Length: 205
Image 1 (tube, rainbow, N blue to C red):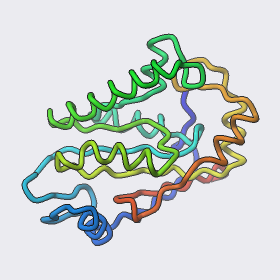
Image 2 (cartoon, helix red, strand yellow):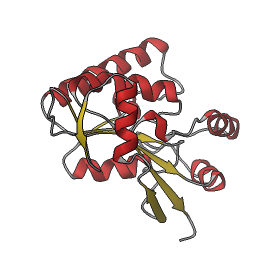
Image 3 (spheres, rainbow, N blue to C red):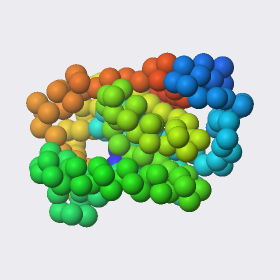
């Protein structure tokens, strides 16, 4: 069972405003025709699809948010789910299996976008390098992904992670040492990466 971002108070900041998005796109060599709060149109493309990058440490509620988008019609892609189907976990999977799943998810993302499907990537996206890699897969297709960063207090993340039992694909158990390392290595996204929505979760609300 995934940890819920929507079970507590949330405040959403759309920091990827249209002018910032256009500046970012022009900076990476894209010819922008126009943009609004929901999508950006690149010259030569008018793709009526969205790609959402879920971003946040484990326990921040990414899967809960992604599941809402899935119910609205998006296709959810998840490392945890694909590894679970193969009887494995992120921390125990072999490098070969991780590469195989990674390649399959990248191919599925591109194929789904070409087929006109909305996609939500339910990954941690813990580093900017990883986020940039996945953005680059769909940018040539005319799609500018939005990053949704679930910003949860560290103490609340620790509480959620220490209560996990490993009962399902999205309920990955981490040791206390792994939790601290994971939190320390997480790189929050910034608006200069591209369209960004920051959702601040107040567990006391």
